[in-house]
Image (cartoon, rainbow, N blue to C red; front, side, top):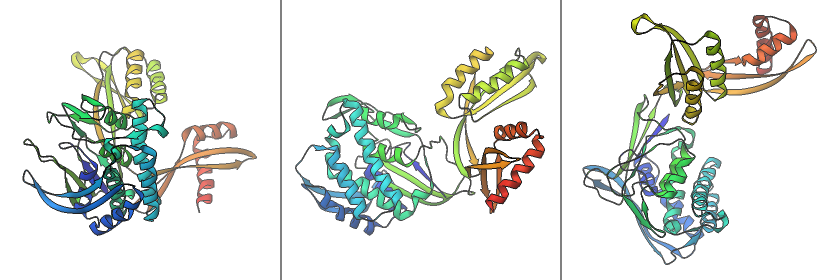
Length: 406
């Protein structure tokens, strides 16, 4: 199963995401009851009314959170809000994954404010996020995700629209996206994009919820069978688009999904020794894989096509290495979604011919069939130590591992 969160047009806020989960099928009464039970942990705030109702946003029917509150505080310590949220999730007897998620969300908000203002996390005070709205969003979303079993699903985010123009809040006016949004997304692998909305489309609460749900960002929807769709409406209205967050739940072929970058360049004046050394250096920089293909280019010139699979965080170092080692004048970059057979990493200690070895291997499972592959460096080390061929050593190690597995 897979959940796609699509904030490409209208961005994301806590109430929009919570509403979209209700529209997707989360138990509305369970969510409202859980929020009301959590109200007592948030001092000096009273929820007068809470409900979820259908509404229209420029022709799109969506669910909207209706929330009426009484509160007179305009500032709270981050630690107070954190304690209220943690007390609430403990009181509601949610799953461990749900409790960890809620705690991570408020920790992200506090951490971002701490870094922006240069104060300790214990000293952080919230202004805009000081309202009970923050508890309603985080606790409500946690209950809904737990109810739908989404903590166990693959979650993907499309690029996040943050809007444009400027935003005015307790610390004055600054360009949009505000510092909190940038800080929250800084250490994630999620992508943001602006548009001409001249408004804040993604809120800090929405950003922290998304950043703690997934690190997987894709530019296109994965191959999937659509099972259900949820639409969550925001409070604002725009002329150019529907202020609606869309989430899509579907099924895939039970393979994991991720997205990688592919770097390619052609070189026609590099020796085999340099290419061999290049592969080692690129792998040391964190590449997933490197391939070199022989071919013919214009004017019948022989060439080598270097193709590198890597993640976003490794691109800069790998590009630098490609240029410095080969002298290439250009590198093509593309993005590719992948289906991956689920696998787990294992370590085992084996004694063979009186010698002890630590062996690493990857175990995969697909459609009821399992297999494993021994790390070649370990295989090579054992082969050298025992003075046996790679083929004979692999057969020997596989038998040992299979006995342990059974």
